[in-house]
Image (cartoon, rainbow, N blue to C red; front, side, top):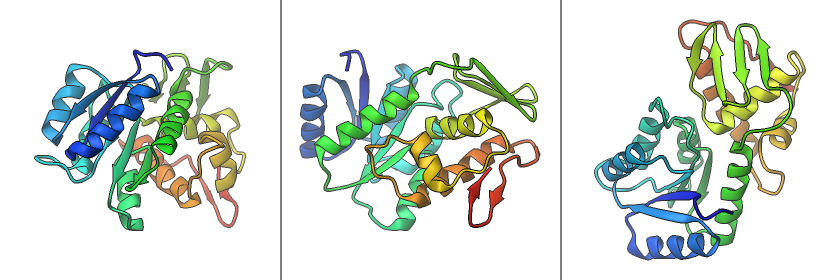
Length: 226
């Protein structure tokens, strides 16, 4: 990993900040630390990080609100976000993913696993080779610039939603099971619950259907999505 890959750590527990900073720097990342939500937003607006490690329960602005605001930023909406929090209920995980997190880890955590997840997300976020332009039903994906439009209007997607959409656009009409989508849009070495796919599909639909556009993603009962 190159040393100019910046990880923004948003965490108010000094011992965890020290643990995260040490392990990430040892793995070759640059790190920046913010201890509250407002500071995190200001830092992101000042310099776009390559990935954000975000606690839920931080002062001034919760991690959930930070996630929402980042996803609403025109210039930074696609920055990968991993939520790292003590909140372990399934409803909390679903909420975190629904508001824009690309991954969700529960404390206590393994620093090695966190670093593996960071590498996996960054690999998936890099420009890919292959078709430069994908089109279907008024949706255009520029795979070089990582931009998506629908009927000429920009569509703002997080990294996971972008990868899912690319899967669908490469073979329109094909039905993919949740396991198929996990294989294609997530790293094979990282365990992700199948329910997570449903959350990201909902987010993808919401982004694509803004402005009253018809839903192009079909739910195929007992089979998956197409």
